[in-house]
Amino acid sequence: MHGWSIRGSKPEVWDAVLFSSELDLLEIRMHELAPVVSKFFIVEADRTFTGRPKNLTFAENAHRFAAFADMIVYSVFHGRTLEPGESPFVNEAAQRGHMNDLLRGHMVEVEEDPLVIFSDVDEIPSAHTIKLLQACNAPNPIHLQMREYLYSFEWPAGEGSWRAQVHRLGRDGSGYNHGQVAEWKLADSGWHCSFCFRYLHEFADKMSGYSHADRVTDPSLLMPERIQQVICEGRDIFGMLPEAYRWKDLLSLMDKDATPSAVHVPRHLIEHADQFKFLLPGGCQRER
Figure 1 (cartoon, helix red, strand yellow):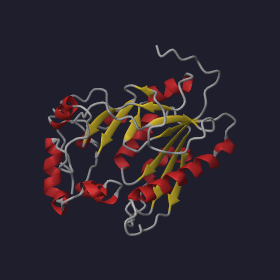
Figure 2 (spheres, rainbow, N blue to C red):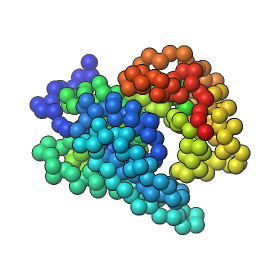
Figure 3 (tube, helix red, strand yellow):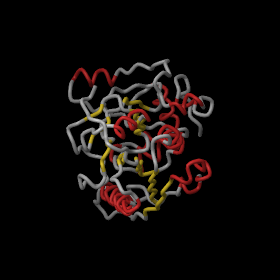
Figure 4 (tube, rainbow, N blue to C red):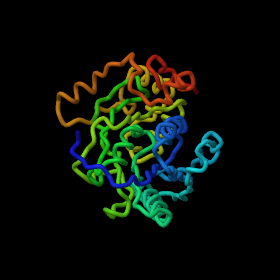
């Protein structure tokens, strides 16, 4: 269908993420990818991108991922406070460099260059997408175009998510990044669930602690009552217009419709619907 040839052998697949606090999405992600991934690389920082101290949430909850212990390569990145006028992207770039060094350090363990997934925790590739890329000589690197969701799988937000990518590490010399590196995109490759948190404080933490903290133009944006209302109504959490390049796209993103369907969502989410009901249609109420 794609015009790709079959590989002579199947390379290992590694999944590489920078972890903040997204325990639920990481659990869903790891269960989705475990059948096709050999290693999960997780880098966790002791500071946010804006330089604020933070807990090592994964380390404190490692027991939750005991089933994958033999597959996990975990590393702590020691961040720093920002200098006056310095951008949070400085810390983000340093953390991505740490991940790159970690990946390169494990290349000696494999005879064949591995396929490595570069994506955020909330950008979850489907297992069948990764099986396809493992079996076929796809373009290298290739972006994964994903179905987008906001707050939960109740609020579809288009298919504009493309930053997730897969690289044949060692062949293209590229570092661990989150920008555009190729023209090739594989459609319908997974799910990007943005701001899909269980607790209200996690929304405020992400809004104020990461690379786009400059969008918090008023402290009232962080009030729990306001955040809860925004989640249930599907509105922009920063009170901004959606990012779009065409009026048609802008209007469709401003006037989103909730979906009652839970078809075509990650398998682990459906199998544990009671545990993750806040991510399913009708479950917009969040915990304090």
